[in-house]
Amino acid sequence: MSDLHDLDAHAQADLLATGEVSSVELLRHHLERIDALDPALGAFVTVTPERALSAAAAADAARRKGAVPRFTGVPTAIKDLTATAGVRTTRGSVLHRDDVPDVDAPVVRAIERAGFVSLGKTNTPELGLTSYTDNDVVGPARTPWDLTRGAGGSSGGAAAAVAAHLLPVAHGSDGGGSIRIPASCCGVVGVKPSRGRVRVGSRDGWEDLATDGPITRTVRDAAAFLDAMSDPSLPPTVDDLARPPGRLRIARWVTPYVPQATASAESLAAWEHASTVLESLGHDVVDVPNPFPAELDTQFSTIWSAAMAMTPIDPEDVGRLRAATRYWLLRGRAVDPTTLAAARAALTTTTHEVVTGLAEFDAWLTPTLAMVPQPVEWFTGSGDPAEDVRREVRFTPYAAVGNMAGVPAASLPLHVTAATPERPALPVGVMLTGRPGEDGLLLRLCAQVEEAAPWRDLLPPVLRH
Image (cartoon, rainbow, N blue to C red; front, side, top):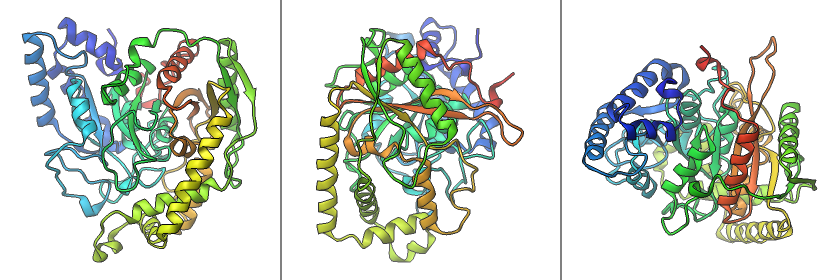
């Protein structure tokens, strides 16, 4: 049998169902792995072994008594941006270092109802604002492919944990690419669902952009974990996953909508490889110009900064924020209500027109990122937060349009660069995006791609025996 940590959530659930392993044994195994590997990775802000093992014992007892949800006793973790009752939620900020919520966020309750047991809280940048994961609470999250490079953000800790097999699945959230960016950096699957599929509750101005979603190693786990989070009135996606998607028309483009960004040779290679795989499956892959206009960047930045300005922060605490957080806060405070309303209206109208114009296509293909994972200090190295933002735009010029349009999107780990004398092999994700509400079709396409070009043997150095 494979090591427990090498099994996906479905396989772990099967072992629990047959009694070959108990949830206590399974969670203790993963906790020991976290103890051994996480000091170098920075995937976790808080680990909760006593709480997790108590929940595992309860899961084992419930299973002995009768029928339980399939994933009862399978380990996961919650992004530290999301409230967890009785477990500190730092939001990646020293301002919240000791905050312990009284109630769980709705998505946490949904994950627990599905039987998953959280081992703690995964690393995130301050208030989830950046496309890299670093903060003043525990420091950076690093990709297990190269510990000198970042795991991406803002769900960087979750992606690093899944990639290093500290967890089979992890909760993430995505307001501008925050699930898909780290999925690409860490070589795992990351899915941002359609707007409204997961009930997110109030998010202080981020509601139209942000949603929760899964970070996993297999598409079947992504579908099942998304189903656990989703509005229960919606049909599940995992039950239909094996049904072929049929012959699809897929639009592809590689030119970013922001003129200051260019796809790297590695991103181009990954995109071309994905196109070849899709064509081999019988799909029609059609080149189109990037349909999203450059002015969306200004509209998105206006809404993003204004949402940050809605976050309650005492004046005396502003100086304790990281430079990038202060940048967005001050920029947002300068946005007047008329400008914000105009940005929201323009963004809604523009993205609706783009999605309508692409209606003949079943999916879109782009790179996930314009670059390979970058060194941990690359974003902040200049000391200028405006330059930090410019580097982020160059790094991730593809993902945010999915949030603006409210469409489902997934990053798949289809490509790994060749190792060179200067750097080891690194993962490069590709992004498939679907029509609004068609999460099931998108996941069926992703499952078909995984079967045709499996990535299970693409392992970071920490996992090579």
